[in-house]
Image (cartoon, rainbow, N blue to C red):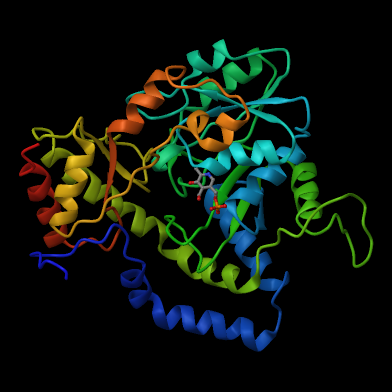
Length: 373
Ligand SMILES: Cc1ncc(COP(=O)(O)O)c(C=O)c1O
């Protein structure tokens, strides 16, 4: 039996977005079906051009997921067995998994308590002669200051591979994430700010050699049918997803604007409340893929919101060094990355998407404020 609540606020509402786009999407999908160009071809090329131009990168290479984007980018950067790659402990598992899958070792760093980003002073303490790369993650949709990362990477001669899976359209000092020129990995998983209707991803870069290698790697190392100049894989972006993404890209700035507006409203209403709201930068640095608050009574707050019909998430409940997978590989245990471990106990993601109604926003704010703890 379900208890009745005054209003439902789902954590994510992909159906609301689809209802608004349905005629455009149906038309785009029908065009692909009629063309029978399901793999490669004009729909993928169009989307790649549009996405590169939107981001301000010379090239965008469509791939099958954000995870394959990371794996292929690491291969292009020539990262492999014997190499170490600095990865923040608070990110989605795939950031580290991609490093492991190319045969290298992710080395977990602590994170900054205010921005949630990789903490460079912690990263510095992890440097060894084998450290070859760093993966700054633009976590929750907030663009990281790449100037500092670039100085750090130059000092230790590291490659930078950006994880922008959550940061489509965010910008630091006016420069969009993905436009730095270096390899930047995007996911178009359905719940992302720019989401496909299945798995999809892309890598942006301004290096023509890197773009060329990415195109080969995603398609069996094949420059032409049945020619194979290197060992690649099948990690192509499919045409139906590309056509859908082209339609959705036109709406991305508007959706991001609405997310920012909702985030500013909720954060300011929660300044005097039982939770710590996230920082709301005033430039374009944040696209609020996730709206993450902190509470010492996170689990009770989550239950309270759930009882009121409000969906929440935890991103992420287990810092990566403490996941079963990395514990089995002998990674340092509890206490080694205190900020990431502390945050994992207190963070809670509230509903955040363009389609949230004023009523849902007010209702969520009231429910948080009424949490007695
Ligand atoms: C930070 C981060 N990195 C990597 C990924 C992997 O992307 P995908 O699910 O498209 O493989 C995701 C999303 O799921 C993510 O949030």
